[in-house]
Image 1 (cartoon, rainbow, N blue to C red):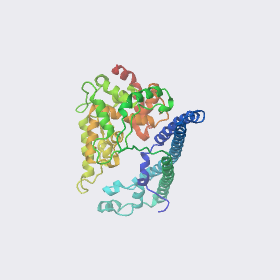
Image 2 (cartoon, rainbow, N blue to C red):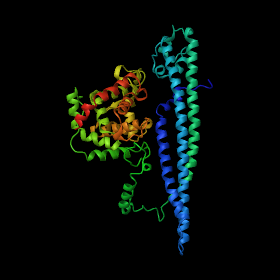
Image 3 (cartoon, helix red, strand yellow):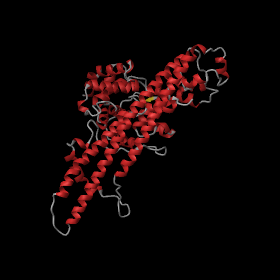
Image 4 (cartoon, rainbow, N blue to C red):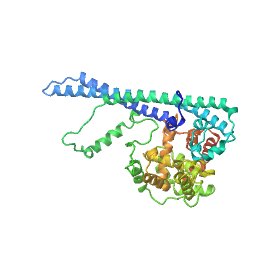
Length: 467
């Protein structure tokens, strides 16, 4: 049907975060402002310096060249910032349409459930819109039996309305995001063209950075007090590598974490065979791992009590061997042929039900998908070998703490107080981060809020255990 889209067409919006796009826009805007500060002294040096000698023309031409370079770079970063800001705004609108579509879809699913239950894998995996479209058709022998006595005439009008409402909102979300993305990409390409391309001469040899390192450190120390050298609230500056492909087994982020934990003293307490029971055991676990938690928080630019407070909550969950059992059950449901296992992983009973990449691992429970994202892998195209590497990192207590801290830093960057320095975060702000950690997009639900409230209630005990 024209003018309608399905949830599958726009479900990527679940993972899109306008706040993070806006944060990147702010980073480009910061660089623009930094360059503008350089432009004025460069202009004064060019226009107000009088120097008469055989080399004065070289001095003047180099200054003019430097000014043009700074001007073009500032213009490029300004254009990039504007493009990302516009895309973030459009993304917010697209996600609102998507939420409206999901609301109508849930109502449609509830209406369909009054007439029957999906039996086959095909029906279980179908979106409610497609389930309604196919309700009178048979997708297999079992569905045919289920639909023999089904009468849908009394819900037809309402189901059609909800179907079109969901599809219309999904289409609005799709069109809004696609148009905004196309405009943003075009503007970013224009911005990129304004930036200079630096090339090394003489056979492509590497510059001698080591010889200049002392001066670089001195310059960095002098500039540290300038607010334009970093976004407020951001953690320690480090190079951000691009996403790794399927041929990369150990990502740069994972390699960095392994180097960090290699220098940490002592053994880490684990929760593979048994989880701490009660405040006394949890306090002992935190105390044994406090240096790890402290280092992880410092690495991510977060308060140590935030990382330790999340650990306090999570270590009391199910032990690691139970996580492995859940992972085995879900993978078995996905990998087993239909004839042997007609139930999808999402429809397994109780805590076994769920997507394979949403299985949590480690003392501080992190979903496999989230762990992959923090470590720089593409969760949509994670190879089997990469999946084993990520799972192993999550199950190692030391690496697990750094990955959890990295995820918490991502959550903080999505909030309205992303610019608040770590040492200035209030308990209320950390409470929201905890609720987001537990509830994800549904952090404002009763479950997410209860988690955040319990996090704050435990802060005193956590701080005591970290001493």
